[in-house]
Image (cartoon, rainbow, N blue to C red; front, side):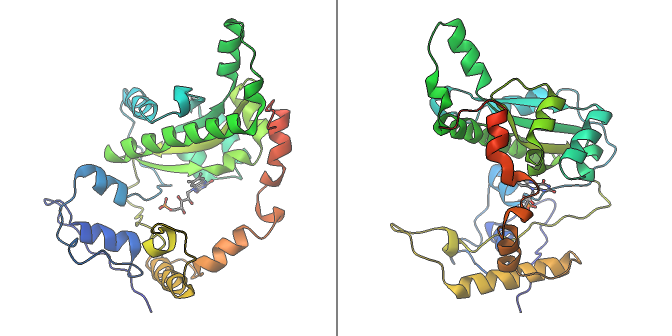
Length: 288
Ligand SMILES: Cc1cc2nc3c(=O)[nH]c(=O)nc-3n(C[C@H](O)[C@H](O)[C@H](O)COP(=O)(O)O)c2cc1C
């Protein structure tokens, strides 16, 4: 039976890579022997300490937070610098409530003081090109949509890292894709703009403990030179590590392999997203 090592880290001292890695992987993967005592910088510490936060304190957000976070988001690389993404920042309580319902009644969407909705946005490129008098059939291809989604995701993840480095907590909301047309209407999106996911933001509620959720062992996801299928033993190790995490969280134990398989079992498990392709066409995307 695998146990999670929740090695505590001295408040006054930078954690060792070893301590951060043990939290990130449990016992299903251990760093190489020369790594344990390596001191890490603040960026690595922030990244390895990530956990989704779904309960927020009443502490108000700093007035300049949005500007800082957006600058971090816009600092992400962008395919051909097309910057094919936008954000809608939602603070209005009623609007958050409606979006929470669209996202499958997720209470933390309404409860978070700030919700950022990341948009894959081809509409601006269409407008810019129209003004320039240029033809834009290139925007009608799936490639353009993929570029926009990837740009939105890179920007969002930069925002997450910036927020967490400032002591804030956040949670992605893929539920924003459950009812894409309703969300688009609520946010006043033009054609060819699609809410890829939301991001709830707030200071973590100190009364609610969240822990770092272990990830798959590196030997499962990283391949040297050529792809090699993972061993079943590595997956069994990870199931045991996740079971230990669930016990720590006082959650029902469920193997990751079972949980992941259930999530992809069919359209009934997709919370309405099985009709995403037709919704995207309704929203004006060509997707050739
Ligand atoms: C694109 C995306 C969509 C997600 N959607 C939701 C969501 O709708 N609701 C939610 O509570 N968590 C959501 N999550 C959070 C994941 O459940 C979480 O990242 C995962 O379980 C790993 O946990 P961790 O972030 O604490 O490490 C989403 C994460 C991503 C990356």
